[in-house]
Length: 126
Image (cartoon, rainbow, N blue to C red):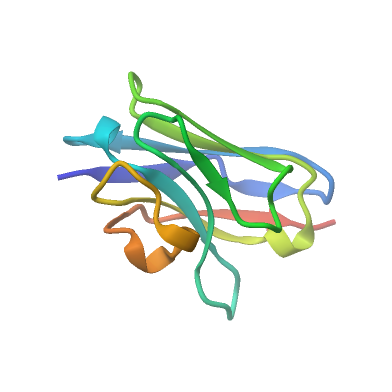
């Protein structure tokens, strides 16, 4: 069974940068697509980014494209999300999540992820 643990959240000023990471333990991590889903206070979860099992394909929601970069190291069982030029609307709990297959869900739909971490808080504020 796959387990995911997030790290790297924190408080950052608008325009700043932050990297959140996800470390996996268990089986089959290299064969599963992994994504980041966030949830702002009072709002539903939304898919932010996803990377395929082999890392050849990555996807972003429109509001973060060009500012966020997802990457993975299958030898270290990690997936990270580098976030640049952060905005207050990027604030939320960021969850690492994995799908059962090697390909990212259509539309980055949170409902398609089967395994979740507990999340890490990212706050963008002055």
